[in-house]
Length: 121
Image (cartoon, rainbow, N blue to C red; front, side, top):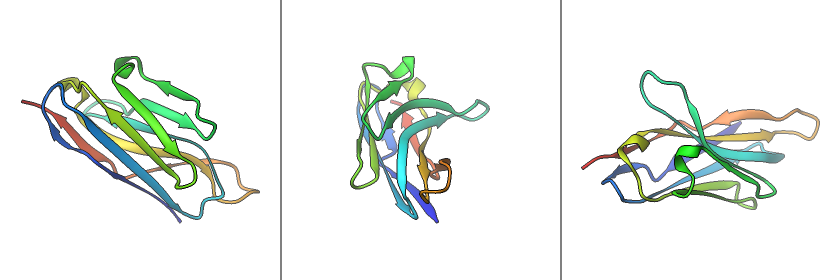
């Protein structure tokens, strides 16, 4: 089985910073990409950022210049450094991995359980 475990969420004041971490473990053959999504009640889950195994990145327009995604392929981890946080960043953040469990299996999406980020004074 594959498990993704997030950590680093919490309560922070506007303008503050948080660093989210996600570790993938289990039956993993290769990881094509990992990323972070966020969701608030009553709204869809939206992409925040993703990074491929080769290091290519993509960010949502709302977080460009404030968030930085990074990865350690050897450890199957991905981090999201969040700076200059705003109340609008408040959401449950979910880690996602697009990976293969076997060489002859196609890649598929796996999700973490989510971690709450609250930006409030």
